[in-house]
Length: 151
Ligand SMILES: [Zn+2]
Ligand SMILES: [Zn+2]
Image (cartoon, rainbow, N blue to C red; front, side):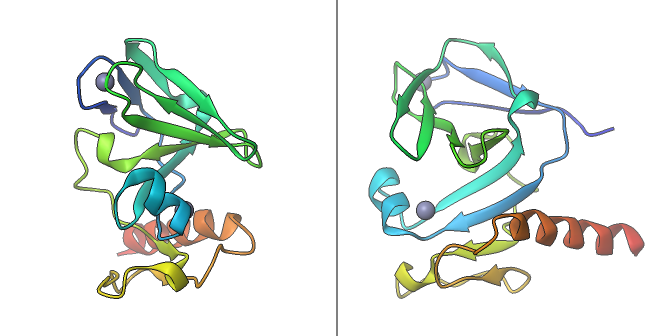
């Protein structure tokens, strides 16, 4: 049974949790992620949307054609996003988790627009742009965890 993972926004108004095993974890270096986050890249944990439980506060949403962003209405912090192409999964902003010790990306997307000084973890796959099939991100995560449990 997976342990409870908890997280929340910077001001503490919104708190959430999930108990499922994550489906994947990846970094995205696209210019859209860079601009939106103000950071060099975003780090995302993928889980089934139905597994997220909001324990405290009421997050707001901001939508565009591609994605719904779920934010804290008070501090504006991004909590997770829902990509309209894959509406059943939540793309959790990894930095909002209380414990990020287990968060290690299996892939780095959009390396073509990554900052020139970025180094990536050796056990991750890299993609110049978007992986053609997003399911590859889930496969990579499964493979990593299968090989671990086989040890
Ligand atoms: Zn907040
Ligand atoms: Zn991106």
